[in-house]
Structures are given as C-alpha cells and as structure tokens.
Length: 279
Image (cartoon, rainbow, N blue to C red; front, side, top):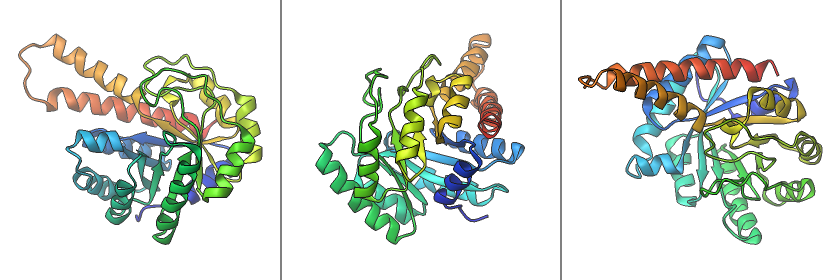
C-alpha cells in the first residue's frame, strides 16, 4: 500500500491513547525485520533512517532509503518512512525528493532563534510537498554523546515553538537519554501530561531504549504518542551475533549470524508494538 501520512497515524494513536512505534534502520535487515513484525501483530509502524546512518552508508541516502520505501509500499499494514535527526537542511530536501513522507529537522544544537527560523523554513518546503515535520526545541539528553537525562522541556516554551514553526510533531525532553544500553531511565509523567495539555501536536519520545516496559506504558498513558527505538534493537541484535560467532570460530557466512540477529529484531519489535498498543 502507499506510504501512510504520519500525521494521520499519530493522530489516530493519540486519539486511541496508544503508542506509535518508530524504529531506526541501520541495515537493510532491520527494515525487513520491522515490517515483518508489524505485519505479524497487525500494527502500523514508522521506519526511520537517521543522518548518522546515512553517513555510515557513505553519505548516500538513496540506496537504503529507496529500499525502505519499497518495503513499506509492499507491506500489508500502514507504514511511514521518516528521516530522523537531520541537522542538514539539504538532507531533508533530498529525503523529500526521494519519497520520504516525514522528516525530523533537528536544530536543537543551534541558538533558539536560528532553530525556530530554520525549522519554519523546513516546514514550509516539506508541507508544500505533503511531508510531515518533527522537530525539537531543546536538546534531549545524550544526543551528542553526553548521558544527561536531566534536560526538561518547558510546556509553555513547547507550545510557542509549535506555534512559531508549524511543526506536526514535537520531540520533548522528559528524562530519557539517547544511546542508553540499560533501561533505567525514569520519565517525568507529570511533565508529559503538562506538555500534552499545552501542545496541540503529538509528542515524540526520543531515547526510549533506556526506558523500561513499565515506564513506556506510563509515558503513553500520560500523553506520549510516537515512541522512537534504536539502541535497544542494536543491543539485542549484537548480543545474538556475538553469541553465535563466539560459539563457532570457523563460521564465515554472514547469513548464519545476521539472519538470527534479524529474527531477534522481528521478535522484539513485534513485542514492543503490542506493548505500545495495549498501554
């Protein structure tokens, strides 16, 4: 089926008070695993490709991006394809031209005025192409490698940022941190509820890999909608690959270890999608 508008997906999830799973693709196997998982549990899903992942793939957006779109269009469930944490405006334009139907412009490293102005410009050309825009006004802990979950988004500032820029989704800082390999982050659910009441667009949780299942359910109940997952899948995938390789030093066929790693990703994404839907 055609790519589904992420705004529609998020609005429906928010109305149903369930979470919308958004999972990062670092290798093609991850995209295939995520689609398989969504089809298995009959849930909508967002495939995400970050600027860092594009850099890893030689700075070339098209090969993996086109593959993600093809997988999404061949799926039997609603799928959106999203550019994640793009600090490069030209990369946002390239994603729109390629066929992505959602982008996250991340100007949180800029001063506040420049961030708002640049985000508004991204919104202008994306909306002209029918593409949704996610953004953030303040740094989410750990994005630049510093594990600091102390950052917090002010509800009034968040509401003004949305009004100034016209973004469709807003990433907020409520106690999570990017790149966490353990799940001990404690989210501020009272703050989530306050931001939800102040902001007219769906909220996005970055750094959810560091949040327990119970914490995620509480966050969704408090008003979080789009749930981004990346590191958590990498941890599980790598653990499976490491175990297989350590058990057979003569193994050389990548399919023999990447395949089981991919299968783990499918199982975990299916589990998380079910968890988010029953929050």
